[in-house]
Image (cartoon, rainbow, N blue to C red; front, top):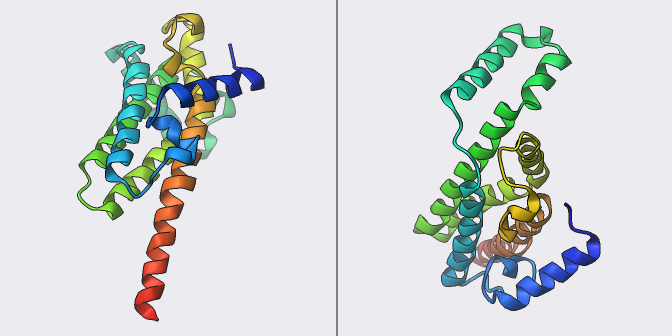
Length: 200
């Protein structure tokens, strides 16, 4: 079940009050200090916890399903432009393809958040944050994968899922926009001012 607009606002407010210094600071930016490495690490750890929680509710992909996807992809690649929309649609809408896509997404998120945490320089860290934002801003695609697996009873129904795993297309987008607007853009602006000062 999707949040209504009123329920979403209420949930965001409740989370902002209950979780000082968490990923919700990317939405309620009053407490966000983008210059603080410690604060940015708090954001990354909270996001990682959410991704790990989602991943823990996903089944392992069988070798048979992996091979099915790879074989169909190879067939379509061989056909090239002659591959039909029906063939491409069969692949994209299959539970096997969507299962793999969701597992790959959680792996990329973990990798990029790990990159944030391991970065020795802010420039490197911000590149990692940019990749995190790319993943988060693709929340609707993640919703397709989740709903496909749910239709095949491979993951729990919404009321049985942890709150932090619900409606990625909503909270993923909010966090992704927050990273761009309140981390990446201020950082780039600061770099631009520094460069202008050096050239003046």
